[in-house]
Length: 230
Image: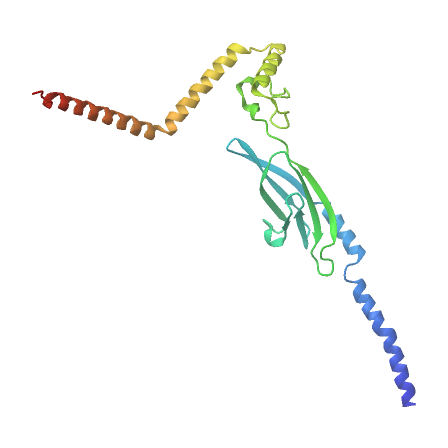
């Protein structure tokens, strides 16, 4: 009887233990969990802002509404951003991108049992900044393709000036006179700005030159007075 009980216990163990293991394994990362996270990913917003540094546009990209237990890979620059890198609990700001880039972000699950599961990717294209958009020639024709702030096709300045003046004439706007006056004012403003910025250095340089001239003149005078011929 005891022997039969042992066999029964062994048989029950063989059926029960694998069942428990399978339940645990199935619960590690259920498909439903991934589906739920992918649904949350639809709420993620990505946008960019820019600032001018040395005449160049630098972009800061903000990724917000990031679900809990999700980390991000910047595929373009091969960088990983986890929770400790986030600006706030559900927001990440990545700074100092240069213009004219296509950025791709891949989102992964970080939750226990689902670590590394890919939830999806999102992309963002940064435009190229048109330096000529602030040129006086673009005043009043900001809609012209060579005067638009973003995305204008690169061209030499002489070609830009020629085509812009042609467009101004078609619009019935002044070209050469107004542009010349504006350029002269811009040039004057640049000179005034330069003087204002380096005023102390200019004064010091002039003072040194004057002192050197006075010293040379004094030396020459002393030589003429005491250099007697025998």
